[in-house]
Length: 447
Ligand code: MG
Image (cartoon, rainbow, N blue to C red; front, top):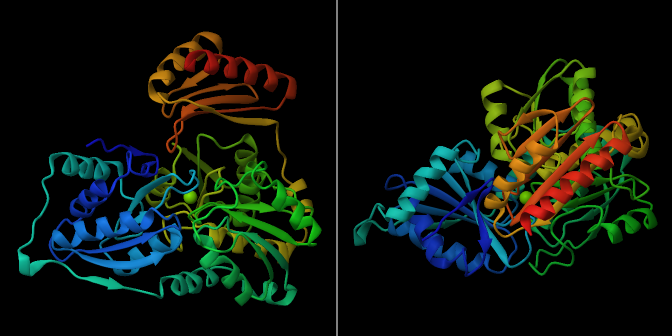
């Protein structure tokens, strides 16, 4: 059985790569000793039911117990695992299309398991060396119902609620029919926000693409403006990612949004260390350094960000895609807490359109190229990039070339069959030249 971990656990098309048999084996592999408590939760995808049941069956057959949490966001799973289990499994494919599903694994601290632990699990699944229990030692399945309330309690404890209660902002929320539907509108209402919710039915029938971006949120953007919202918030399928829109319905933009969060954090925690990835914009670095903070860069993926936060004692970690980790809560990205922090920011400092203008930004281009054999193609692309561009080369995660005043990154997506291209330059004309040249190389190499 082929099991491949990407940047974010295992992901694939249901009943092709992601089957009930695989779920069963994962359930068996995750039990390290009899009596282990495994928290199992899922997103709103309909295929989650099949995978949840197969996985639970695997856990109990190996003598572990299942804490069945039902449908909830990924950060809620991380928190609940930290509070009451030995391991957690989130059945989700995050922002991928509906035919996908997958598994994300958490350790007892609510942090995604390390790549060594993933390899160990892969080995166990392939060799089928599982713990087996006697007929009278089969584990139990317990249901819990308060994990979402607990998440709400912890998250609201980490924001300054008073300015929100005073200002009562009008928040337009788009949960994309994903798991955020079960928590975001409620926690905001409890804080005093006036809520207009769309796609807040956790049906697993998705009204829009689960990847929140300018294109997929164009209707939402008009709605935020038409409803006179103070702020618009859209989530991905599993609620670890939040995209913020200003009162004009305009997206803050991935880099400005992240920069704004970094700035706001460093205003409270001066000279602190912040973690981001190799995809982060020059704007993020400049914002952090201007505030006296220190930026550490790691490979793409919230697990990598979480690890650097842990070992370098950083106060915050954020990826440009909108996944932000607040370690005082849990070492996993939480779109819910991130959105509350932006609501707090609006209530304290005013219109987000104005705050966004205070962030210096540079022309940046991001593109995704569909590609079935992404790793093979990457080898060709790397060679071609090295020949075609002059700059400082870094191959830690895909290929990155740094120029004076700009950079270029090409990497295989960790979550879908695609190659991602990011390019940024202080000069728009130079950016276009870099981008066009790189895009041509990619297209030729994947053809
Ligand atoms: Mg996600």
